Length: 216
Length: 216
DNA sequence: TCTTTATATGACTGATTAGTCACACATTAA
DNA sequence: TTAATGTGTGACTAATCAGTCATATAAAGA
Image 1 (cartoon, protein in one colour):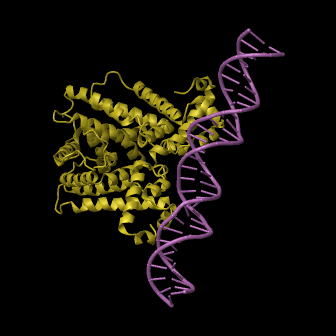
Image 2 (cartoon, rainbow over the protein chains, first blue to last red; image 1 turned 90 degrees about the vertical axis):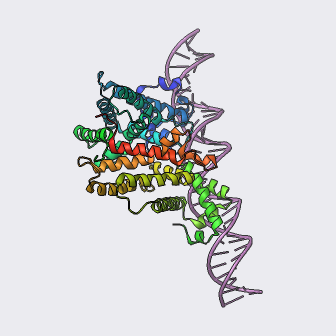
Image 3 (cartoon, chains in turn brown, blue, purple, green; image 1 turned 90 degrees about the horizontal axis):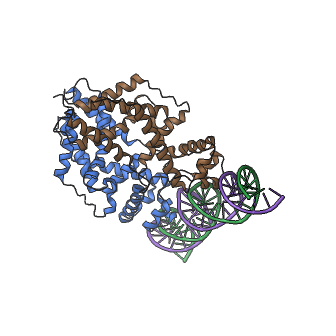
């Protein structure tokens, strides 16, 4: 969706534009984010930006695509081939996703922001419904393998699991006293959470999925 | 937070201002919502609005307070006194909340929007953390009564339940083919969901909380 | 050298905004 | 009637925005 001119740019400049745009769009919703501020920070002329992208909207859509692809690629590359158990597979996925977020707080907070910005009808590609669909496909398979109880509503379960997969970031943030989705402020990019701590939380979450909380 | 002048207004005018402001703030985030549009629709002068409220921010804060109080009052008044079982109590609460949303789609979508608009630091009163705190107090009580398994992390469980209580609206919307949080468009205010259908979904949700989904 | 093509630029436009203010109008009290 | 107080008004300000466009610069080809 960018024009060819954008891809002809030296990589350094191209990446600078992407990074600075992400900073703007990760802290402000689409309508509030300012192209004027972006070009000022990136030290390029307003007109140049319009040599690269048709509009603010095209820039935004490109960023969503760019970051989503990076994240999916990262997650896919960290999955084992032969995981037959749904809950173990889910743990691998969500662990990889969390690792990605921790290592790329800017990308993470951007995507989180995009997910919330649903008041702009033609922009909200509905990230959540894609995610729910994906979880559902895994869950149906698990259901057929007998890993899920026969009385479970798979649609509802997919919904719950995919939404909680996003929300859990908030929980981790609260628990370790920082704002998970605005870590870019901290500059260092270092998250004060170890792999062990992360794994403990995921184990508890998955136990909730498996057994619930009632004392029956 | 409004000035005295606002309360001196005839009820009809006061309510018109509130309703039209809510329409604006329920479809747009704070920064994007336009006071100019509000006064135009409400057919009052810009200057008048500033006789009633110090600023756009004060109007917004008043609306949040106004609607939150209405919803809490409604929920509180529909709860039985003597519900000892956490899961049954929770069902009553969330059922009442859903009923409120269905009967007041404008209020509902406004609060939902407020919850998502977290990029404005000094505005986000963090509705979710209040809600989580409330669920936790119920859960601790249930824990002490032996209704919750001893190995459950009550903090995580409170978090999960309070977030899902909000998210479930999306699920209901998807399931019945409408956008739960933008029903005001439909004008009628009528939700195409019966008490029975609502109850079925809540029963499934609560069953997830109680037993999880694993075939153990 | 001259011409063509690609890229960079920033002043400008027209639209929109939150908030202001001088003034008008209404109601009550003296 | 006059004064005081409370309320309504809409033109105005200064800021900001997305997007445009005439012009400048640079590189490449003839």
